[in-house]
Length: 134
Image (cartoon, rainbow, N blue to C red; front, side, top):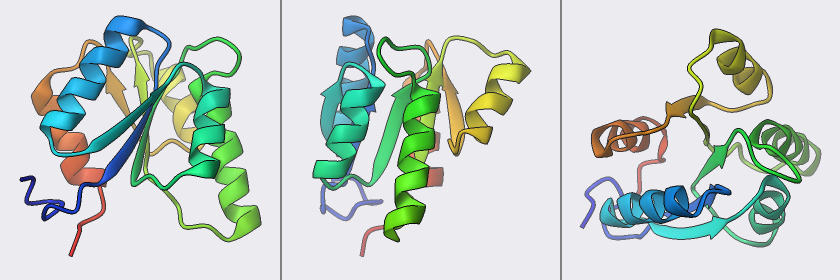
């Protein structure tokens, strides 16, 4: 059991268009004790967020149809408009360029996780951003 969640099974949404990255992210998050939903683009992430309950989102920055930045912007606007609680959004990117980091944070993402990521990198993100569970 993940002590951070105290067995409550926090839920994560992963938006990633690369099949190998989808499998890796889901496996690592499940190993950390989370229930994981995986979608293939930002538009599907926004739709899943609207229809489900998630404790944390991981959005790939470069996806077809809608990228992670645009999805984060749409989710943040909906949170404000609808009075919803702010959910942690972690951007996933292979680029470590400062401009991309700034663009992601400006879009409403809380942090960036660089690909390829390691288990320890993801664990630190969860410890920092996943709400503590009673």
